[in-house]
Length: 283
Image (cartoon, rainbow, N blue to C red; front, side, top):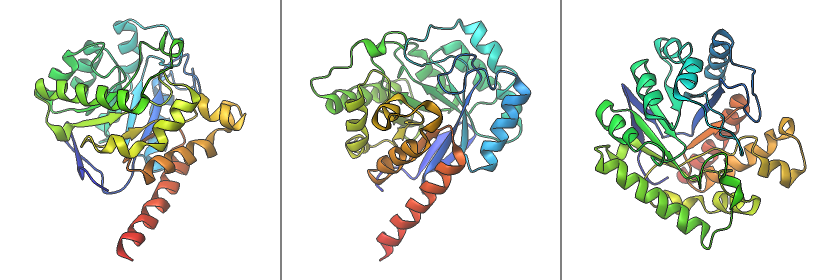
């Protein structure tokens, strides 16, 4: 696989020599797949620890739903959901990613021990997140999203989907670097399910290799997304196999990081795929 072998994050580095699994921890009452299950800090922490035991390399904690049509959450309300979770996980030595578009929430999370900011707006909502990551050494995930969660599915037509998304991500990474971020702090995410049609999501996955050419590690987050449900005609509860297929397809095309709800199955599937890849390289 081309590209960096480490992703520098606050306080250390995430090795990219094997697939990196990012476990999803939604402490929201309205997430599309697990809303209200982990709003209590003790329950959320227990779930995070289970995901670590199952093989997660880091935990991505979010307190604002980004499902299509979701309304924004005020920063104080968002942080109130996160405050009892981020620090206890970081104190256990877990690499915590904070899923937020808000500068104040990102700052508080880093102060509480978070090592990564996962910004689904790609610095579009709060450009100061780039400066924050540059100053603190936090890892930065830049994701493509057209519009906001409330509006993103209103227009999913593109003249050149992959070209537009890749160009936008390249510009966002350049903006982060202008703010002082090093290249090895940055990960890019084409934003599966964020302002794309079913066909568009499939195309992004099929052409993952074109994003790796930008020179940054690529993260994909297809987990339980609606395009899988539409392809297979299944509900959220029955999208595991589709999620794994999407992750493996992206892995074969160069993706190195995978944001998933079902950590154990994803870890095992990706580890076998990596073993096959290494056997092919050594054969």
